[in-house]
Amino acid sequence: MDTEVAIIGAGLAGLRCAQVLSSRGVAVRIYEASDRVGGRVASDVIDGFTIDRGFQLLNTAYPALRRSVDLSGLDLRAFDRGVRLEQVNNRRLLLDPRQNLFSGPRTLRNLPGTFQEQLQLGRTLAKLAFGASPHLPEPELPTAQWFANSRFSGPLVDEVLQPFLAGVTLDPSLSGSSTVTALILRSLLRGRAAVPARGMGALPGRMAMDLSPGTVLTQCRVAAITPTGLSTSHGEISAAVVVLATDWPMAQELLPQLGSSEMNAVTTWWHALPESPQSKVVCLDLEPSPITNTVAMSAAAPYAPNGKGLIASSAPGTRADSATDGAVREAVARCWDVEEREVELIATSIIPHALPRMSVPLNLTPPLEVAGIVVAGDHRATASIQGALASGERAAKGVLKKLGRAKKA
Ligand SMILES: Cc1cc2nc3c(=O)[nH]c(=O)nc-3n(C[C@H](O)[C@H](O)[C@H](O)COP(=O)(O)OP(=O)(O)OC[C@H]3O[C@@H](n4cnc5c(N)ncnc54)[C@H](O)[C@@H]3O)c2cc1C
Image 1 (cartoon, rainbow, N blue to C red):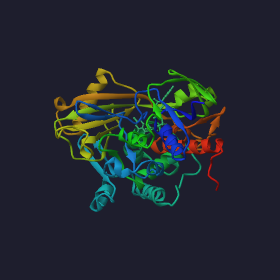
Image 2 (image 1 turned 135 degrees about the vertical axis):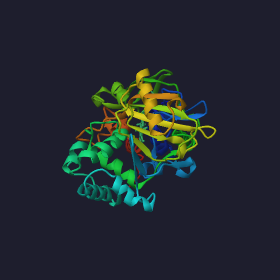
Image 3 (image 1 turned 45 degrees about the vertical axis):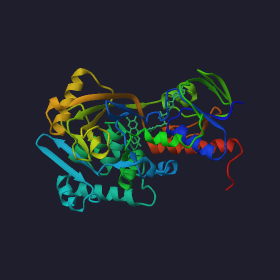
Image 4 (image 1 turned 30 degrees about the horizontal axis):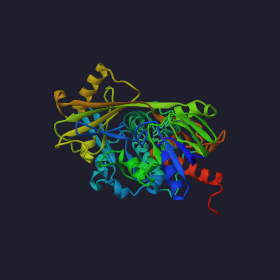
């Protein structure tokens, strides 16, 4: 046997599974198709700018994240809790009063919707944020339906909830599960959204440091699997247990019994500005531009060289042609009060398979084992860093059980 446990994919799910198994003395190897660890969480440096694989943030309240890394080792840089609603001649800041005590009255004035809706939103968010366990909406519904039943409508949905969540779930129709939306809102309210100073890729980089050298074999593509072996670009590998921790479409290709996969896509445009803006909140562009949100990464983290600014602007879907690029540049200039000629495109991240679609009804605990293969990945939990890490932990537990090495309760 080549290894006790063979894991396919060194994304967060595969890395977390390997971390847990290694800590229990299990011999494990990860076979990774690309040239590095991290999967969808990665960073490149382009012309001195740190460019993540699409705009993404980690949340300090994710329980599985806290179990996976020492957050103090990531040198986290937090964004402010709030959003800016951007319209021509109408710029409204909605700041969480915990961010700035004196912002409360202004935020209430700026928040669209009737007083009744604002009160109801406050109640809903307070229940989500401060309950000891998540106060999930019952029954589970498409998010848009949950909002309608909660009597959220009109500008409160159209100008705040829809554009904000479209940027997070990449589902502008809000057809995804209310359970996932509630969990997202809960973690945003309980934790801080942040990036490591050196880019999101520092997270998987740090996790990989817990593994012995040689545990991850990169540039090794897996072409076929059985419960006890893999066919790879480096030859045949035998193992006592196989863990499939790829993204959903590849998992379905290697293990068709998983059924069809549905993914949401995103495009992020990265622009340099001559100077960094100061605002550390996500800006929602309510004008009819191609972008949903735009964020000054350099206001929170040292993502840009020499005092320059780095802006990440995103939209669900894959769309980067010269007409769209031009319209995005125009929107960035408008949102950040600069001339269009000062906005320089550094990179575009086009990610067709960004997030698994979280359709209703959602099964948060699908079978761990399918046709003798242990399956992990965000598509087996929630479409998030938390979901990927938690699925890796669940897979590790299942492997230990299969190997007869589970801890006695
Ligand atoms: C643009 C974007 C923004 C996001 N924003 C956030 C956010 O703000 N907050 C949040 O919590 N989450 C966010 N996410 C989600 C989060 O990044 C993912 O849920 C998580 O990283 C998924 O990890 P994973 O291990 O399940 O899968 P992946 O990261 O996809 O890892 C799978 C690995 O398998 C490898 N692989 C695939 N096929 C093979 C093969 N045949 N052989 C060998 N290896 C293979 C891949 O190369 C990859 O390394 C975002 C994701 C994207 C793309």
